Image 1 (cartoon, rainbow, N blue to C red):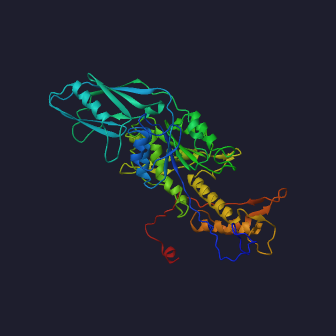
Image 2: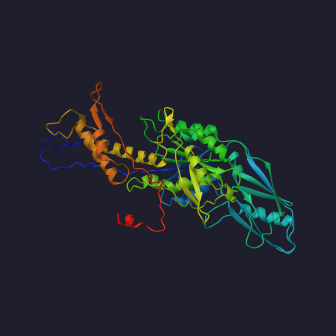
Image 3: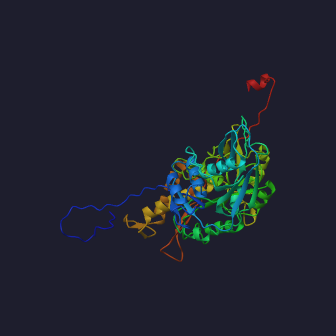
Length: 504
């Protein structure tokens, strides 16, 4: 018996007619959201999410040299086709002010190079130039800096007075204290080497923004992966409230999901302590050493790493969501200049046991993803690694959406009955719903998201609720495919195989 949504069953006048309905086609859509600051020249509205499809759009929306300008360009380098949205949030606190004093310059001139936030500025010094003229040239270079290849600007504006260049951060807040200013050692001669320049911070950056208004503005729009540079305790608490299983985006009555990644820049001991202080599957902490020369600021790190893995985490159709991510190169990031600050295996293993994610550096000096995890370690006070792998979150979001789509398309706007002997299409039975669930499960087994269909089907329970005959309850165990993290081999070495062993 055909089921019609618009053609009545009691018409009499002759007609050959068709109504058109969708048979249903699931497609997962996963957005990356970047949280940060804009400058006054940016056209975006504060505390409102906005789509940002390109780096050109980012400069218009948030202003050249802004935090979000930086985050979008590095995210695009690592995820060229990813759907990216941004949330410009209101600044709070004090803008950092630093000084660069030009103490001396070579009498015969030369080239002076300085790096700010990992970006190199080269100043040509002519014979006879004074410290005042070099300071003026340096200030002009900072203000006018733009790398047409990477599209980078700088997080400071500059003014020169006599031999002193005063740098003022484009944004207020403690997060700006993380910006690196450095005189590199060059293959040739750097005129700024030695005691040519002296650095001071006259006004430290202070304050952390209140993200409440911006996070509330996300509403029920889908934002699966969220990168934020703000790691203070108040905002971490806001992330957890945003994503709460009871009242937040993961609640049963909202089902919009999301996961926040933020950086922690500190000593190994303090990072470990911060990890152990959390126990939540909806947040991820990315560690960075407190000293040792972090060229790129924390907001670039968190945006780059999350953007690098988001295309896989969103891809359940090809099984990429389940894959080990170790060794993925993060474009645009440099390792700490002090090699002793690179995390060794023992440190990374300890971090992972403490709820902290890890990265590594290869022989070419490239920053690699090591293992990105959530910060949940226990359930009901006992150790539980079910939700440790971040892949599990991506698999879960994909699977729940696919199940919900299948159940809605096949059983939405239906009646429920224990049996359907007339095969009336307007009626669904618990057995029909169970069949839909098993079939959808099988589709995800074939794409590498779930496994062990037979066991899952045996444990699946679909039944009408005892108190509400209009309701169907489902018990659905899901066995997720796991990332292959460790391959351990026992290599037994012989000078020569024994004859008996060779024969066997």
